[in-house]
Amino acid sequence: MMKKNNICIAGGASTYTPGIIIGLIKKMASFPVESLVLYDIDQDRVELMGEYARYLLKDYAPEVKLIVTTDKKEAFESIDYVFCQIRTGGLKMREQDEQIPLRHGVIGQETCGPGGMSYGMRSIKDMIDLVKDIRTYSPDAWILNYTNPAAIVAIALDKVYPDDKRLLNICDQPISLLMAYSRLLGDVHYKDMVPHYFGLNHFGWFTQISDRLTGLDLTKRIKDKILSEGFYPADKEQRDPSWLVTYGAVQDMLKLDPTYLPNSYLQYYLIPHQTVSHLNPNRTRAREVIEGREKRVFDECRRVKEAKTTKDLKSVSDEFTKKDAHGEMIVEIAESIYLDQKRPYIVIVRNEGIIDNLSKDAMVEVMCELGQDGPKPEKMGTISTYHKGLIEQQYAYEKLIVEAYTEHSYIKALQALTLNRTVIDQKLAKTILDELIELNKGYWPELR
Image 1: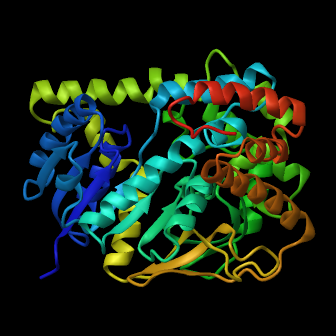
Image 2: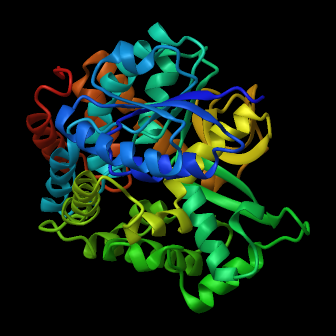
């Protein structure tokens, strides 16, 4: 009989939690679950999410024990896998991360540019503390971290926990892109696509995508389709309007440089003037989420709590049939480790010779085989002068942010923002930095 797993979702009150639970239910035969813990520091939110989870499990997986808690010991003791998706400061702080740069004509985005710096500096302490707490109670648990901005968080965690081989930093955007390519082609499932990819988190390129079943190279077909038909997310009917603009920008970038398939987030760095023209400081992505997904999910939780069942709700049944990159990916990664399947996933790992002409300590995002021994990365060899230059500049920015945090250094924070391609101007960097320092009092260390 297969060993059943004890799972904890850290950040259990997140609006992404329902998708993860449904992902677990879908995989129950191959990835059996003994208990599921929803852990969060926000008691009211996690208890409401817990009501949804309680009835969802009762309806579809009654054998799973559910624990809803704000207590670290109860959350992390005897756990096999922790799925981390915390958001320090919540959506209200995210909204200001996005608004402050936009007031100065600079990209306002959750993980990129000054907004990413603001959120990253907030996230570092909580993620370091969270890993410490998990390791106190479950030294051998696999920690699968989704927390943004993943690039900055990964550098900070690697600095503090360099020898922790069961701590993985991952991002669902590459999978979301594969899903979109699959919809575009129409005849290849995204799970049959083998992605060859390099870069940093939210700053990378697919060099090739091949069909696992036939061995055929799909890259040219995908490029041609994007150039002729445009590009949309796989679930475009459910996406907020800003996401359609984000994916559409891939066509623009590909027209300018068809060398590789760009991550959609590269629009913030490669075509910033066009990108910023689409952003509204009075209605940023954070406001879309607050009035959209946030409201929908918690309204659903309240309906489930009142109805005491999920089976009569169409929105729940729809969740079982739709493709959810966030929920499905983290469960499938855990499954690949659990069954030692060595399936290919794009993961953030220390470079150490994966890309020959980049610093060994860079936290790069590349295709890895994932099994019980952790990620086995694909060697990329030497990359071009152009891509090396872009990555080195971005990595310098990310590394300087972590150093600014650990050293309480104002000058390194200023240097970081000056390097970032969304800012560049040093005086403008100082103006924005000073406003972010004021915003983040109580979150950031005091910079001197």
